[in-house]
Image 1 (cartoon, one colour):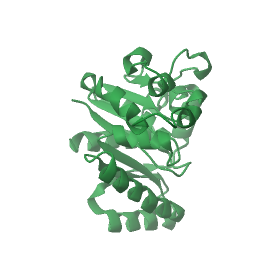
Image 2: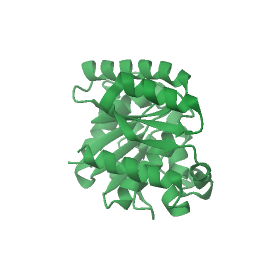
Image 3: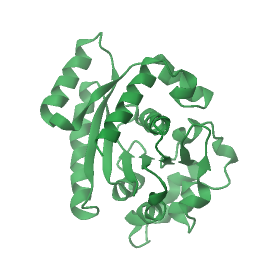
Length: 252
């Protein structure tokens, strides 16, 4: 049975989608079967694999709102990762499902039907504690939290951990913290080292040993419609995400 990991942080600009795309691709490079579910209406993970969102006939919107199965919308990419794509229509999902019973379980029901087909299912959540993030947390076995190396990020982490606890208590009793990965780490600054030390001091062994550096190649790869491993596999960013993927695998 595949492991379902939601990549979540309500704060934008922390490297969440970069982590979702790069971790999924890295796990694929390590010969794992991987599905990336893009649950963000912005669809950046979708375009990060070279898929034109405007040309999509169906997306994760049809799964959450309608009766489509994930297998109906999954796209096989050339980068050793399958993707359930997203498009802007998904932004209206919360309003459209406002009166639907058990709407928090829509994604979970779809995932359960296909999880045996993959080693890992990664869900890229939107940068908010929204209905879509809630659906993702309910569908997941664990949450992976990208955390930018700045002090404002620490305030958001407390709120996110509280949300995870609430979801575990009320909607998904098996939900765990997969780990926290420090992103945009700059070894030249004291700030990055101070924030990392603070997080490790408070969270302990839930913080991955791997840190993701600030790396221009990671920023450039999406504009070429491919993961970092197709764009520059020897870059520091690519090496870091391969190390993170190995930690995820070692965690079981």
